[in-house]
Image (cartoon, rainbow, N blue to C red; front, side, top):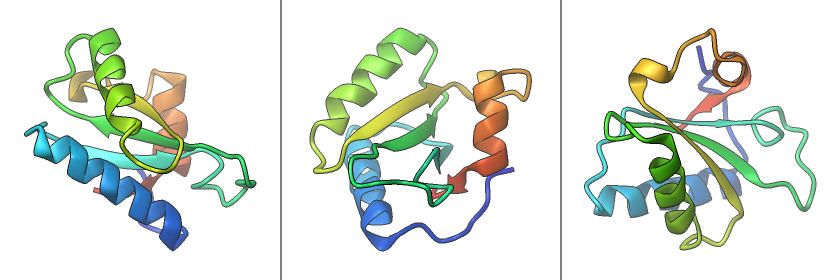
Length: 107
């Protein structure tokens, strides 16, 4: 399962700002996990922030991605959102497996 290790303060702040924007829309959020280079502490100056957002509202993955992308433009960082419905967040999905293995839980 996703770790609860520390992210760089700047990254954590950007993700928390993103979560606030989503919560203003009353999006029910089950979990938010940062993964990829930021979670592995391998990020460079131009790295984005890979953010997995799990919500029971995400029944159509295309619409969910479009919604999350539009909201990501409201924060200063480059966030690459990855939406999941809780039922789709399963180990058989290689990306989910990677998120669970290396991700850092923010919410």
